[in-house]
Every structure is written in C-alpha cells, then in structure tokens.
Amino acid sequence: MGAVLRELTREEDPFEQEAEKLGSLAPTGEPVKWFFDGWIPQGYVTLVHGKGGTGKTSLMASLALSAAMEETLFPSIAFTNEYIETALCCAEEKSAVIQERLITQWGERSGDAFKGMDRITAYPTPHPLMVRDEYDEWVSSDFLDHMDGRYDMLIVDPLNMYKGTAKLSDEDDCTALMNILTEFSRDSDCTVILVHHETKGTQGRSGTHAGAAPLYDRARSVIQLEEVSPGTVDVLHKKNNHGPLQPTVRITRRDGALHEVQPEEEAGKAVGAALEWLQAHPDAQVTIGGLKLGRGDDAKAMLAHVKRVCPGSKNGEVSRAMTEATKAGTLAMEQVKGSNGDTKEVLKHHDYTTSHD
Image 1 (cartoon, rainbow, N blue to C red):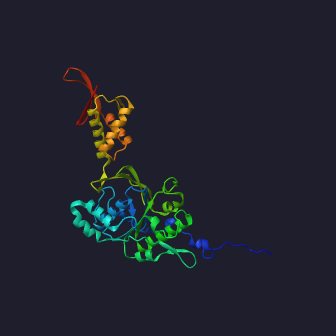
Image 2: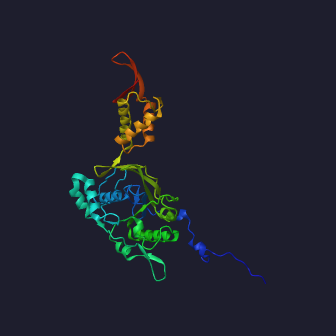
Image 3: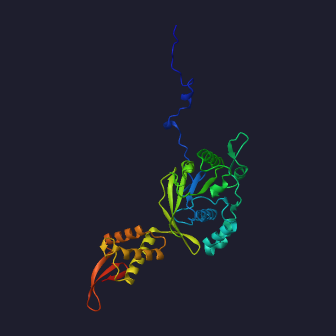
C-alpha cells in the first residue's frame, strides 16, 4: 500500500513557523537617532576614508569636541544629541598635537574647549580590536571589551594600526572585523567611526582598495574626504542606510582652524577675483560665461589668480558661476566711452567692473 501524503500544518512546518507577514508586524516607533544629523547615526558603524593629508584626523577630532560641547561647529554637519563621552584612538598623532589643534579651532573660546576635552579620552597606543581565540576564530579583543559601556562614541584612526594581525586586504578578515564592530556598536549603543586611508592605485567599489570592500558594504554610513586644493577638502556622503545622502560640504583651513565654506559665498568671491584680474589686465582675452573675450592662455592665468585668492574654488565652478551670472543678466558687456572719447567694452558684474579694449 502506498504512503498517504498530507500537507504539513503551520505548527508542524518549521519554515512556516518562522515566516512573518511584514504587514502584521507592529511598528517599532523608534526612529534612527543621529549624533550628526543625517551623517553619523547613533549606535552604528560609520566609515570615513580619504587619501593621506586630507584632514581626516582634524575633522574627526573637531567633531568629537563639537559633540562634547553640545555645539555645532560646521552648520551643514549639525550635532543633534546630548553631550557624549568619546574614546579617540589615534595612533598617528600625539595627544598634545591634537589638543593644540582643538585649542586653535575654538580660538577665544579655548577655555570652553578645555572643558569639552574632559569628555574626550585619547588612546595613543595601537591595540588590536580583534584577536584569534584557541579555536583560531576571530573574537573581540580585551581592548574593545574595555570600551563597552564606557563611551558613546569610539573613533579609530587609522583603522590599519588597530587591526592587529588581521589583513584588511583579506575579505574574510575584513568581514570578521566589521561583524565584531557591528555587534559591539549595537550591544553597547556606541557609535563607531573608522578612519581609513585610501590606497593609491587599486581602487575598488569601496573607494579604498579592493580587499577592503566589506568596510564599505557593512558600514551604515560612508563619508569620503576629497582634496579640492591644499588646505581645502570636500566632505562627500557616499552611503547612508538610514536616509538620503547629505549634500557635499566644503571645509577649508584658515589660520590653523577648520571652517565650512558656503558654496554661494565662495562662488561670489571667485567671480570677483576673476573680474579683478581682468581689471588689472585690460588687454587679456578670455571667454567667460559665453562672453567671447578671446584666447585660452589668458583664461589659465586668470584662473590661477582665482585659485590664489580663493583656494577652495574649482575652475569648473568659477566658469559655471560666471555663466549663470551671464544668463541672469548680472554679468554683461557694455559699450562705454572713455575719457579720451574712445569706445570701450566694459564687463560689469555688481560692484566689479573691468574694461576690455
């Protein structure tokens, strides 16, 4: 006699028991909390990467002090939480150097900065974040366990010096590290910020190097620093699992302190610098915003001058700003008579004028 087949009930089928209809789940009612609004979520891992010398350490230390003082340092990267305790693991810079930078950053408010720095604890010795146990499996290190419950934010800078014997070029090692840090951040409600140097030449989808792809894939937010000119960087939001990507922020260093550059203000200064150069070189021939004033060699000299005056500007941005001004009618050529009766073309833009024979 053949066996009689019957359909398993939900109580008997283990797969049906674990299945859930999304519509039947009650909303958690717990929106994501942010340390820095839209940029760095609380209780998750954020990756900050860029080439050496782009100011990653200075920016992260400045944001840590901003959080400690419960104040916003850069308008577009607003602190939106209560004051926090931060562990700053920075093996490349001496603690005294970082302290001096932060004092310079806050200028006349250095006294307030000192109070804020009481909430930042530096760990200058590079201890590993994970180690292998007796079964040759990766587990969290005593150093990482020490952080549990002590701090609200953990900044690791640079990650390469805290990896221990792990190889960031090895995908399995990198995945294990991110799994351990993700579990740590979730269980301790500690925001982890990993500062990672890009490797020249071999760029993967992570924007770092191919073997480090899990850093990008498993981080909830990814921020890249890209140099615009010496002392000026663009802060680019490359990934955000909890909301939209934030607009690019430009940061420049003036008198030893970091400042956010407002794009409209910078573009206006750049246009002004270009017109001032033209005023000093009335025989120059350039093409601006569709106004054909001649040769390209003079345009290069003009843009070099703009770079000196506005180091945070880009050639393309200057051209676009002047093109927009031309379309809006605020930048135009006008025929005027000079004092000797000769007719000249004058390039006018708001308070700036320059003649062109």
